[in-house]
Length: 107
Image (cartoon, rainbow, N blue to C red; front, side, top):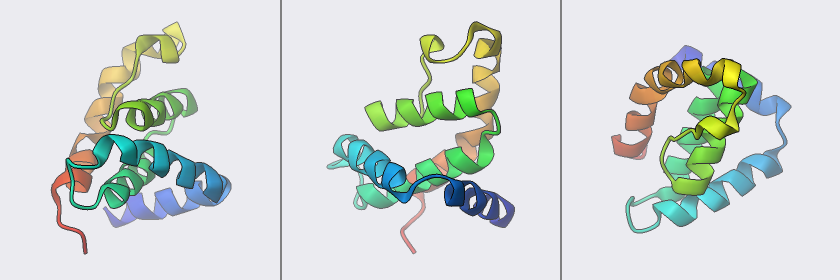
């Protein structure tokens, strides 16, 4: 998990902090009332998606799904047809970290 966090930090340093803040703001709207710390859950989901999904098209689709629904989701129309077969593997890649974001207590 520490390696994933390091990857997240390196990828996040390339993205604008405002984009992450806006992601959390939009995601939190879907999380409020479901989680005690919705901003922390959304930030955690963002960071793990950024760290663990190497393909930019799949990563952006996943972030869009989280931002728009509050849960990891990818619509086939959001990724090129040539990458749609990788959607299930993307969910497998982030399943454990996503569950940890949602169910582990805030440190």
